[in-house]
Length: 491
Image 1: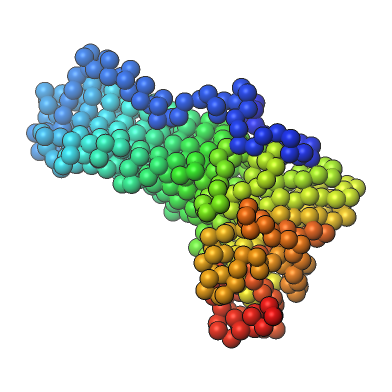
Image 2: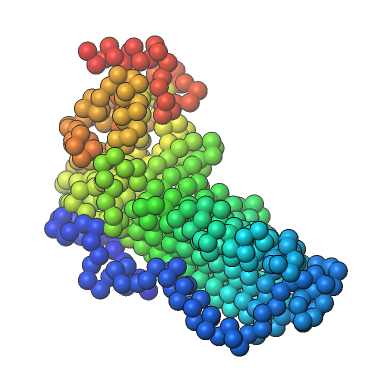
């Protein structure tokens, strides 16, 4: 794996390669979507159903114990050749418990078979199966507080009208080849503790995966191959890592990643969706710097909102730029993209490089505490550009793909237009100064030439007040008096 990853540490970009097009031999152009792979696997399983026994939970044993054979049709506890169905016309709702001391087995587990059926499995102990379907056409739930769930395929929901939920808690783990959270707004995977290990994880459009750092023993998801995001990933303090070889992450145009935590996968980040660092009001960071390459196969058109964001005091970190020589380098875009288009992405041309090095760039929420004290104005975005020790250059020219939708909204309320936007620079957290050299309102790009390393902000009338305000530079309109000052400065 990882043989075709685009490395940002290559030579300076010359813009000669076509942007957003799969390269010849690129696995992304040929590899089937995970849902298709799982569908094919399900078809293969279906062909062997005739040789499997269908067992249904009927509760005939009078308790909730999985191991009590009387609770199953045919009074037989499932084994590795049986399909275990919980929540069906035999009993619904059906609540089943696996005791901490037990390790159970079946061929296929189904929870919530038909509309109106409810199947709940509370796992204190372990379960091994070829496939687990949580919410088939009905409602299914796994609440896992202990034991290991070992499966080839874990499918939360099927997209056929059911509702699936899997909650993983401290002391438990899931080991799967493939995890699919299906296309339904009611499908949810919540990682509240324990460890999730999988070759691939895919969140379908409309589905939700929440990764929550509650338990001190949480290991976070361990991904061996690829993370696919067509729906919503919410992360609150968790850490995603790879198992040995680098793992890739794909965020589709419909995909959303939001929150704070760390994606330390080591492979390629291919994002054409919307990624938001939500600082939770406490300066938290969404760290995506642990990838080794950047791509985005789908353009973000003018008027669309896919790109990079930071809110609620958050910071977004992407993989750093490696600058060996003079040239143009993209942050938040494919390195060979001649024109950036994802919202809040940046392109930097370095001039007069005498010693190569690395540049760390972060997108900050306009109320991040690292901004110069007293920052005020109408702010669309703020970037911190920090060359590492050793990088030496004469000057840099920057281009930023500004947030045209936010500019239209705030500009309408404040009486400003996009052509009035400016780039502001604050060197070493001191006073803000305007450094704009041009605004392209067609492609939503704004330029500043001959700048150095510092904070950069895009907006209207950004300046430093003599005394610090409670929430510096929030992305809202300022008080009427401040707006009056900005208008006077425009005249």
